[in-house]
Image (tube, rainbow, N blue to C red):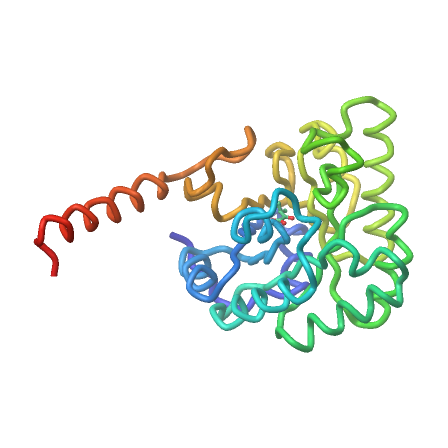
Length: 262
Ligand code: KIV
């Protein structure tokens, strides 16, 4: 287990890219899981708006609010020591204008103590990324399968499959990098496209379902630990906590009903 020694910062992320050190990002949504992720050695904890799907019972990330994100990100910050904490700005809290994005990001940073915000979108969000970055906010961009656009995509589908679609994502990556994003998440795009983007931009690319040539990888807590009912095809489960948990609870139920507990 590799433990991180120094606090991760935006500068660490860029230095890692230059030194070709792979970054490890993992989602977490509360204090104890943030502490466990950090003990296990992750560099960055992402409080993803996947929160809505893995913890709050929604069928997409669309219903997640700024209040949900602030509540859970503040809990994660209380559990971290050295990991960098990124909070997703939820649907509807940043798309209307750079000013709206600034107001939401400021609220998140002030009320949670996290280090950065993540927003979905490429060329059309570049002006917003520049606006936030010029005002001192660390911004992570998110391209490819951007879950807040699931209704437009018609489902959680792999993106960038045609040459034309791949070119747009490539240009999106250059646009967010030039606008001042400190990293970019590439979700569910062809491996060769992610490799081309990673070689072309100066900021780290963090892949999920985007192949091994990204500068780092991110996974959702529930997928990695076998807590999800069904993992996406690109997300490996390293253990089966669903089984361990239901077995343990089932044994306790049996023991109570048999009068063996307490
Ligand atoms: O919301 C989330 O967990 C994410 C990751 C899948 C990258 O954005």
